Length: 237
Image (cartoon, rainbow, N blue to C red; front, side, top):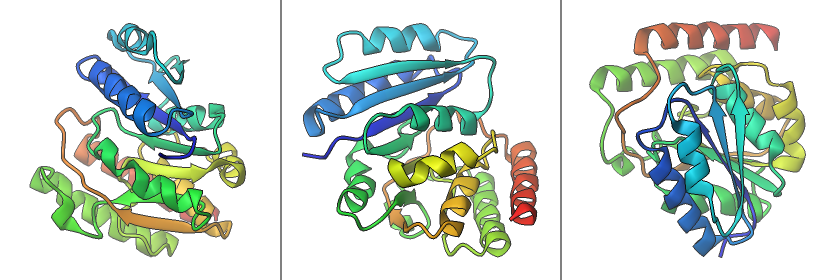
């Protein structure tokens, strides 16, 4: 059994898969952590995401909430809203595509529960043999270059800041969540950087991962925006 924690799932126009994701997550939490809670943050979807989530949450055996962001504010804003609304001692967010399987949750929850880490986050880079389905070559190489730039710009020793599978001890991380400002896809870097600068204990954990179709990231446009955000973050430090 896992100790109580809050799961946050940010979603934007995920009608095609959010129902299955919510049901699978509820089943996992009911069996492995009955005192957990699930918070879904609908980030201004224009499809049926909200209605599907409400239907999937109906009759849940654990605590659940659906938060609505309108208009769309970005993944960073959605994740922070969910984590700041969490009522359990630890908070974990992951993507609606379940690219990191639910069975990997103990890898990031248990180090925090043991008191060994304040932030534990999944990594695809530490053991690439754990990657089942790879991203398209162009996207994978762009990710490697981006993470190298992050290491050089921030001084952080981590090899994968962008895997959407991160857990936080919320009592010490709440000030960081409140301080963070990046709304888009570089929000992960900002959260880790603020935690790193604050002297918190960060642990990068190899996890199983599979590429899922339907990513909202546009390789060129979003990569350039993320680079600008990382540079701005470094300059403001």
